[in-house]
Length: 255
Ligand SMILES: NC(=O)c1ccc[n+]([C@@H]2O[C@H](COP(=O)([O-])OP(=O)(O)OC[C@H]3O[C@@H](n4cnc5c(N)ncnc54)[C@H](OP(=O)(O)O)[C@@H]3O)[C@@H](O)[C@H]2O)c1
Image 1 (tube, rainbow, N blue to C red):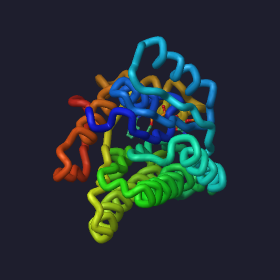
Image 2 (cartoon, rainbow, N blue to C red):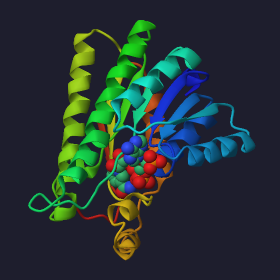
Image 3 (cartoon, rainbow, N blue to C red):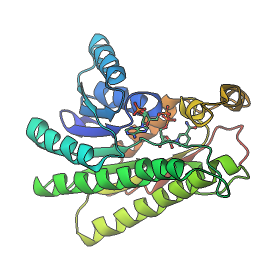
């Protein structure tokens, strides 16, 4: 990770869960990290934690709603002014809402598409343009996908979510192909976790927190740090190694 010291990473969905764990790990490794989400206060707390832990990097909290294109573009303009640009983009923000295909609300579908697919695509495009204009040839775009990006489980609550994560699988491979065509060594990778104990299921089942609790208690889940470790592994790979996808399940997870 030495080559990333002092360089700039953007982590979306930095306020809690997997994003917060990734932020801490990258700051610990000496990176300048712009962490964005809607809950700025939470990211500010994380920044204070990074300082009190004596980590060698810095977290710069930024408030951004990824469903609003202007906010995303303003964030990239701010990054350009404050930090010249970014070298690593971690598209982590994401959500599932229980909106089945036969009866779900359009607003819920839109929310999932705007964050999981459009937000991720906007950030990837802007990150690449930022790297290109500064002649950065060793950047990395990492998408936090899901096992739901690879198989459809028999649960109507997550069918639309799965569709949005299948899109992430296609987008990551599409990015890899376009990067090859552009003759750059910038890499695109996705990490596809199974159950991770975060706020994710509580947000999915906000009307029924017992269901979320039961899901997380049913097996020994992955922890957010397990995913942060995978990010560090991806960023540490030698420059000629293109990791496409890391699928990681809890040992006890069946599907
Ligand atoms: N937990 C799991 O079991 C699991 C499994 C596989 C994949 N994943 C994926 O892992 C990623 C992180 O999930 P997590 O488990 O850490 O979930 P989480 O604890 O619910 O965190 C989700 C993050 O996304 C951010 N976010 C949501 N909507 C946003 C918006 N409109 N604009 C900006 N940020 C937004 C949230 O920040 P604010 O609310 O502050 O905006 C939060 O930081 C997601 O892509 C998820 O699909 C999770």
